[in-house]
Image 1 (tube, rainbow, N blue to C red):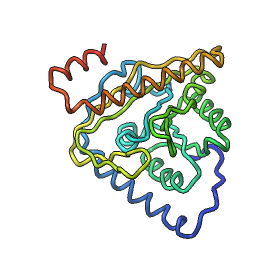
Image 2: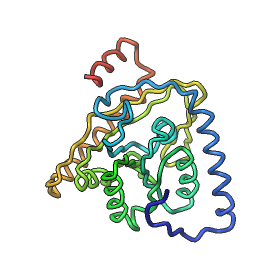
Image 3: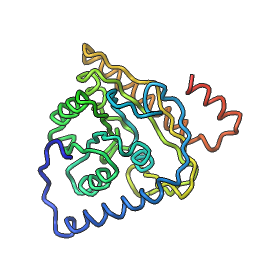
Image 4: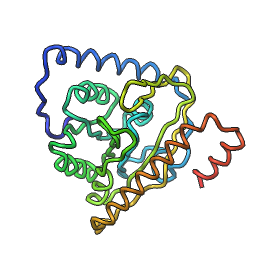
Length: 243
């Protein structure tokens, strides 16, 4: 289901031909690898550990872990923002086959309108999701969309990151995307929810944005170092995130 801004950019014949092919290949890869991932979940007492219809949240995460994240949160009718460019078109086909809805647009065209539509979907009970440094970076620099949407909608932001024990890293991609290797272990760490009151002013919004950036960095560092820790150190981390 596409909610807004379905106008597509001009694509050449090769791009139009590749969109369905890439979409099917990537979907098949996720569908094959996803069931083999063994997740451990830390944190998330208020969201993320179990799906709770009627209690929507705004999810935000780094683009690097989009493949395991898309698999873990599949089939929950979440609404994801994606771009109308070439990459966005094949990505849309992948995520819609995994049970998501999409709101198409870009950060430069229709961005505010996109947030308005996302707020409406939150009111209707649907989760919303952002790859917070997407669609093309810069890597690990959070965009302000989730905190703006949180202020408008009154719904909290859930930040998370997924670390993989074994993965292929696309070193030439801007996001250093990771593709899980078969039967890898994964740790999904979810931070306490970030609240943004509706009366938050511009200065307060910037403060929340900085808070979001700092927490996303902390989540990334914790999740990606997880499998290099001793079991004793992991247990201390479990206690900290689950407290």
